[in-house]
Image (cartoon, rainbow, N blue to C red):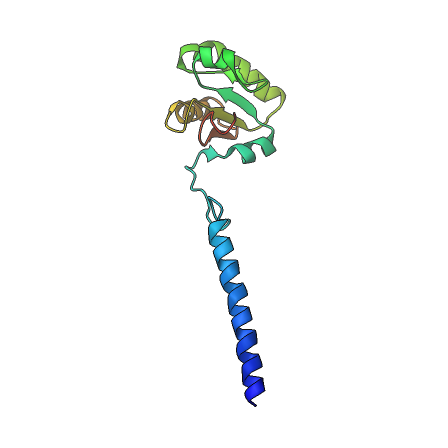
Length: 140
């Protein structure tokens, strides 16, 4: 009986050691975001990875200088300064291939992608239109 208790305690201490080791490793190697944590998006926002899966029409709402120096392939430059010139081109592209439209701007703090998405919904009410969460940084 004494041997049975000794073996039981020995197995319990080994199990406790492995458990402690596993918990310590998990905490030390913890990811920045746990899998069960979801990003909260505004109603019109989409993440970059989700947008890629849609193969959208990309709208760059940044300055013309930023657009010309670095933009997504086939992105259209559309902001309030060139709205009248670019809107017909966007409408034509969307009518030829009705894909979702994703608008991005310079950073997560800029509001121009959201504002342009709102305007586009008025002009293209049938289109599926999003603003990109985080702006340009997730794309880089």
